[in-house]
Image (cartoon, rainbow, N blue to C red; front, side, top):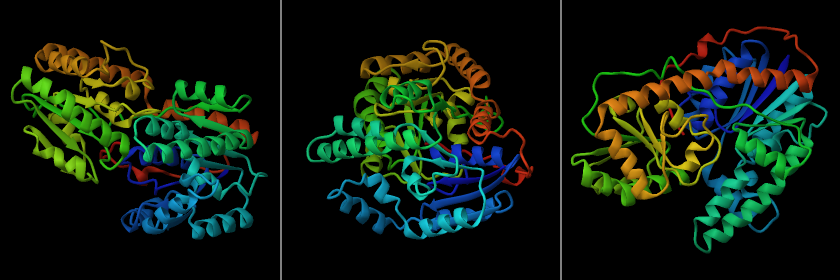
Length: 414
């Protein structure tokens, strides 16, 4: 089967949420099919990652997203009916390259990751198209609006309505839609009746993310994530201001490491709080997870599955998470992790773990077992295979390509 695979960033290395998913999907598909990649690059630094794909993909069309122009397009879209998510990613050069591929070659299917990338293949309804929403971005904009004050709330609410209409149209006109949790699937089916849709969950690399028993710090908490991403920023600021002081009051000397790339000014300022460390970008998050006693995921705005949560649990770390972050994970509160939304409850759960090494051990082992049972990539991506067979009417791949050259044992998170 010949597949065109679209992604909003170069799907390598797997060091943040969308790249983790697209990397594993590309490896999986390239082992059975011929896969051509078309993607935007998150700046020139991301363009350097294109070479890693060339031994696996039959072709790679990559265009750097020009940040200044993208922001201008998004701002200009406020005066139109176009979602600024769509305008932001509307790079003319990639339109040209995708058109040349689709019109010049035969593809059995097109797989699109994220609604902002669908515009590049909307003109080609004759090819079976799969829209992988992962989560419904429009509903996240609604959450942003609820959490913001005017005028930002007005802008976010406007994007929610426009993007919801756009995503609904994609779900109706594409051959099939994919989301990553049963909760997202329920929402999609309810909001877009009749849409053909399935759930293909994220997985976690259980070989790369394994428990480590040595090098634990006495009372270390860790949070991982891209630190200019609004839900991460909002969540970690709330935690540092509302929860962390309560924990320090009960367990003196508790430290929190905020580990992730691109920390913005509000996040950097958190390092002034006693016990808080802001690392910035690191080559591998696993040493930071390994030295921690507890991982915290205090996201109050979240949809889909949080890779940061899966990675911590795979490493045998007990986790305390807000319900918005934990809702997409097949795990049991009190056994596999703790779920809490109130600052007092969140702090109390964290203190219980910091104060009881045996409870830490039991919950860490349960977390690892949960990941092994439910989040193996191979198991999850078999569902993607079935969807491809359904939309193309084919179950006999034409070619097998080796994907071993994309093996990567580094760490990443959302």
